[in-house]
Length: 312
Image (cartoon, rainbow, N blue to C red; front, side):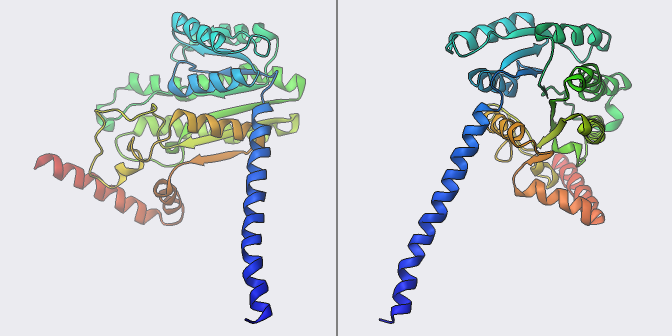
């Protein structure tokens, strides 16, 4: 056998093993950094009672963060805090602080801001996890519902961010992270008010990012297709229309633990924007940007197809 060929045959497995080892080492170091990225930091989680909120609360609590959990129901917040305390070592974790927060009640926002700051006197990380969804034809959604969606998905988070930012600016450090929907970048039928509110929030935090960078404050957005429970709902039915494939709960959704893992990674890496979605929704994003006429045609065809299926 040719000596050169023999050398090549022997080198290929070595190169593969070396490459795999480098990737493993990189993943290990990255995971280690992620676990320590929130230790001793004050972390605020809105809608801590949701699936993702609870997952984040567990991850950050175990990571040694000083948690401030926000939600609409005080009793359930206390239950969550008790669960976290009973499942952790009190010598390496901190008891959770609780704050009632309802973005639908905008008049309460000044009081909420004060309560959050009173917990520790400052904060390091603010995670906007809450959101309200409505799926319906535009003409059937009332103005009151439009306003409620905007309060929950845009005005509430924007008001809280502006209320807490002075504390971060004075310390010249902090991280704002918006967990949003891919519909903050891409709109589909029957979600007019929801998509509008998500577009507004996306634009606000994109603008804010440049404004606060000089103070050492990071702003990140994570856009997902759908965040569900550990298992998909038995009542969930996928529509036959093409555009609906972007938002079906299964198989294109994101589980709370997957989303929480991405949040930890983003806090550690300080990435500005992350899209957590399978290939199809990402293709739709690029198609909307590069070939808008094609995208609009596909969406319109999907609506007609769904209407025809319902009339059969």
